[in-house]
Image (cartoon, rainbow, N blue to C red):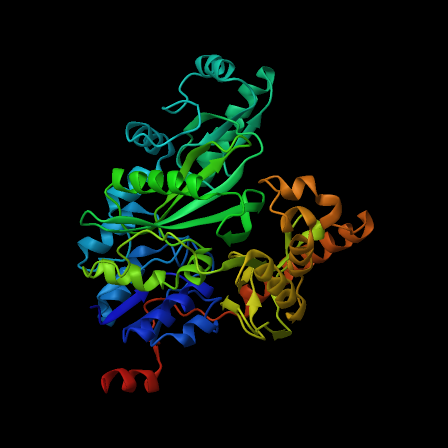
Length: 501
């Protein structure tokens, strides 16, 4: 087993990984930017080293600095968390070449499944249902326009190398096609450095359902059931749950088998997620594979009893997986809400600032994965997620009731949050009855947002002022602790406890 793991990430996911390391008797190493010097994850680690820089490009994406720190601190392995470098095949290769273990799939699997058109071809070859569309990237707009007409409008233009809604356009009629392709290509190029786009049939009344898979890399691949991720804003998930209210045993079995085939097709190793769209006729289609740990992994942990980070670590260390069979029955129901420092009533605009007061919810069935504390600064330079709140219940109704109670108990001030919005989602009749699609927020916006135009304009002005104050604070007050600085923080009590084992 590994002796020391460097976590190449920040915030709540860094804390989450460190907790499992602690349970396993493994030392953890944090790396941090200037802004994150006083963040909870830094002090939660056994050792912490500065990367310097403010933006992610200057810090958490600087893999040469990360590998240098890993060598200096004597780490055995590197866990990328999610986001940042977690699905970067070049980084995974560099980690292995430098003599460390990358806690994740092979660079080849990351590269193959990270390209949407290549992944699509692979799924077709292994009989995994895919949405009708082009197998290759669009080369000629006129030809592509003809294909779109044959598929039938509406169609989606999607970035071949990306995700998260970037480089995506919905085209409802032929005369909109050329402009949509050009716009999607520009956005894809800016976001991913690759302007390639492809065409996909628009799935009507879609539900977004994903399957968690585990593979030991030695021929054994299983699934751990599904997560429903249909409550989204701007193609980003905000509520997840397991199991899905839509699936019955037959559909779950068929989708689970397809997910396993998809993972086996790319020779996968570790924890990953196969994402599907399910249409109004209950037909399912492969969407993409996330070759990393998902933000929403806690709901699967709550209904299976597994620690997915521990599974990742033991598989990477060559010890296989603890679970030998697919999950046939779930232990109750779990719901996760992502709490963001955003103003939902102003188009989810960021709300940077200091958390003046914080008292998290707790009680029966409640778990919180958080990367902040009272006094923490929410910066515009990183994802504005405050924490993930998870509620477990013996059934879906109890899990929702517990989530409602936890959201109502949660106390936080100094910034806008999405908590009021999430309370409305949990209490909405369509959500409680399981009757929703990925267009839930658009369809029921009148029930979820109640702020008038004047209030929205005021909120937008406050956000702009907050942004300017944040820039001023960073440029004037933040000390430069670059990665060459000798500063290193250690939890001496933790170090001595490990030494005495």
